[in-house]
Length: 229
Image (cartoon, rainbow, N blue to C red; front, side, top):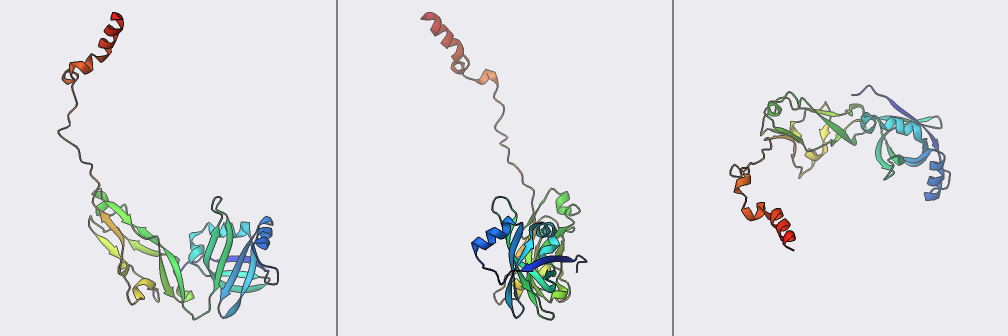
């Protein structure tokens, strides 16, 4: 569990007219439209100061952490489920938050950190560590939500691989994909052999003396031809 605590201040705008026009007006006021849903309650439309949200988004843990959202003095415990960004400028345009309920399990995508790359025997042998996932969906109680999952690759040699089932999970945390009836225990990282460029040993440097005379004298012949004219 992380010691980070993320808190956002928001304003309830459920009573206001919703739509693209209203969202554009909010953005002109440096506010981001958002919604909080779930937890057996009605969805609540809110607005958040853009600078406050942007600052929180700088932290990876924000995306896999229980957040406190103060809506006009009322606290909501929630997790971020979706974030829309401007396609060119990258600033947040809309956010979806899901309420969490104590004792009720949640589904969350958490980042995967691969550690020990430089110490791995495969790396020392010029192998290439290929990571195939950046995050994994887990199921757990809100109080057990990990900030990230760590995979130690320091012992990997060339040809080794880790699967989903090889991840050491915190207590109470399971991987959603492995819980499915047709779940696939896929590879998440492997150590591939070094890439070797093939060199054609028969392709020796061409000596100037080996170039046909017609090619060597093209320039001279052209000059002589011009002189003759």
